[in-house]
Image (cartoon, rainbow, N blue to C red; front, side, top):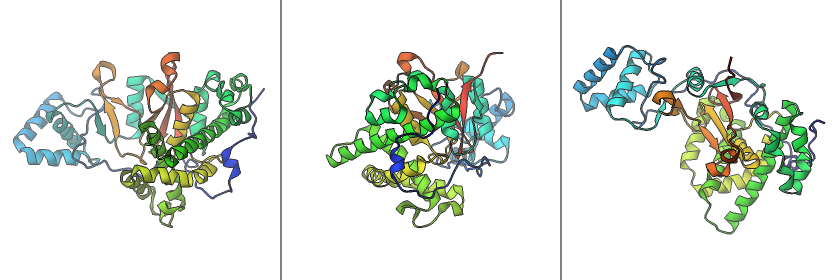
Length: 374
């Protein structure tokens, strides 16, 4: 009547134990991050009713001042807005500069967790709900949002899947505790990742051109592997030192640099070389998991997944677009899976995405759920 705690199969069980860090054991906030200072990104307020500073007169005055200041001053003001400026007045000037330069369909801004959550509540009716701390937080946050129908077909995929979940997983899912669901979701992700790596390996050996969707998933796996390995001081990416000793900011910068500079063929080579090691670490109960596991669960269950919040391992800014109520600016997820919307069964079943919120830019997840009417 309940899910088994000792799963009969996991590719991670075949590998030796390796030390790893648990990124979810502490809910302490990460250090504040500086916004990107590239000239192509503009600051923009959240919702006018909540974030806009000053009156419309002040806005007009700011825009007039910048028009008189000339292009050079305008660029300096925009660049200054990309840093987390100390005063709201300077932020307001940057907003005016952005709007003066012309409208675009999407903007990237530096905002904190509180602002993101307020926006998600106001525009999407979503609220964050704690499901449990520790390294299982990602899977615990997903557990109440997945249904029996999402896992019922898994046994038919192969003998390995039947051995992992059992023939009656659909029947047992609804009565299982969230903790038991989370344990199984971790193993489902690991098995799906092992199959993904086997498929990628076959394509590389055959000299095939890697499709965009497969490279996308390999890159997400590469980023998660880089974060895990660099923070733990293992593999060639860590350069024989534990980057966690130099602060999380340096580690995140290193991962973003590697992601930008590593060519696709080297990404594929690395994930194939170290994939088993990564799954051994991530497959361990209580260890941190990330976007690559979200992608694996999206592939296994056919559900769409969305992750919101800051995500320092991949970006320093949060994207928004004017798709909220009455054209208001709405926070976009930093990660969605599957790669192509049509790969999800949501469109057919009209199921909502499985949504999670990542706190402090990395390290802890909460469920994002629809607000219940009073």
